[in-house]
Image (cartoon, rainbow, N blue to C red):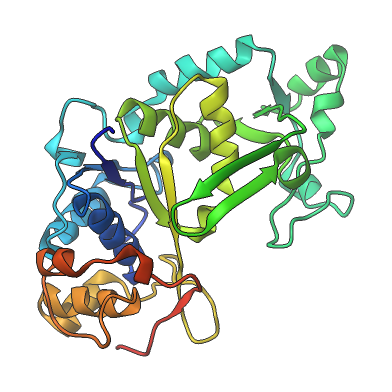
Length: 314
């Protein structure tokens, strides 16, 4: 069996919040408890929203918490580059392979058109693309090209994609019914997350992905790309989200429990690690401890299945 290679894959669009920290901690614990390694990849596809200063800051924050990594970020390593903003050429190679298969086509739909009433929606609010631009003739596509730059979608198959999540068990989805043809490249030329993350994890040797359950529905999409590109997928472990009392998940956009405020409030990393351990079902009550001390206690089966309500802290 291959040695475990896990990863941190933060998007540096702001300071990390408590939910990001929980995910990073559980990814670190899951890999380290199996004698594995950790890769730090900076998911700064949208370089304007993700200035390097935020990436440097998140490295400092992770180090302060004791969640050290083996390669990646500014540390570098054998699988450079570790910043997605520097990987466009790598993504282009895989994109061209999919294009050569006849699976990629331009999409001219505006945001308002995508939200139009005729487009069905998944229960969580995701739009299921109706395939509008897949049906265009060559002449229609040529005419629309004169009016606006398209995004580029990939055709999905009408078939079931199944996998076993390490935490939530067997999962399955039919992309044609639950997602539709999805975007590979935006109209501004930036590659989409779904393509980038597949290529990055494969090239970096990542074989265990621990991430929030909000990305559970992305897994069949990514498995579809793994298969088309003849790449080996990792094992997936999705974990519950941290929410406020109203059930709203914590987010950077809303400035929820950012690490700057947590560091100022608690003063040292041990109370934060202890709080996260308690929320993740590893301790009966919050008690200060280091990440290394928590590693000796870690039991993945104790992590809850339901989303976790965070008590008022600050």
